[in-house]
Length: 252
Image 1: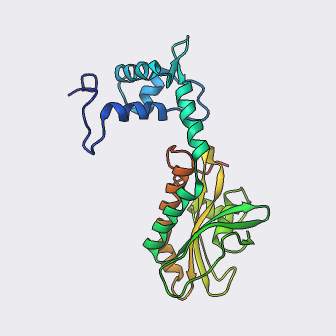
Image 2: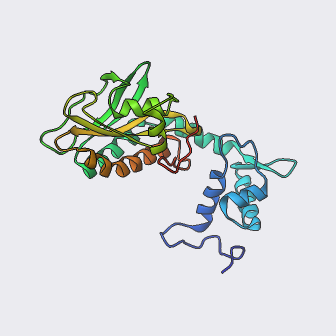
Image 3: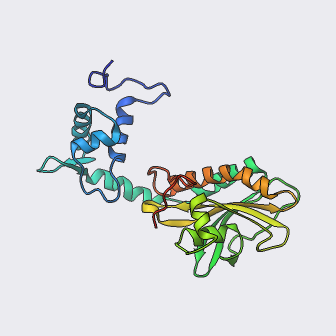
């Protein structure tokens, strides 16, 4: 069945509804710098045929989720703005961050933390303790040095700190440290971004160096970056996930 003739209420394989999914993709095509988009650009960004994109756009316009301007371009409407305002008014960072940290602690067995920058220090905003009997303890709210430990180094790197090791951290997308802040404590960390690549903080796991050798930290790096991408996606309000790693281009 072609894109143009598909029944609007047809269900997709995972139990969703195609028409609803396409309507959401159309609204998600807009970014924070897009005052308006042409039909051709909406079609390109969503992968929909122009006829399908136009039909859905007109349907969304009936309830003010989209508005067509006099020159034929489209912009988000007041109904979409109201949803955004409701989201911001009821958004609870803790409800987003803690489940990801719990999953990270379960996958790695180590304590997981979320750090933010406050002046020349990093503050542990949220933390979930690991499952191991012997673990590294950090009190939530504790202020720690930025230039010691993987989470602080990551925050500095993606804040634009010049030179090494920060250039390498930006290329790699994560950083690991062994005994840098405390003897016998190791950690690996990756950055968290919000809308328009605004740095929000860093996520890390930490534990005894006797258990977290350099090789072991490297093994956990992919899991850390996956959690960082998940948090970036959620904290950016559901926009496309930020990809960090060797193939990513950092935008200050």
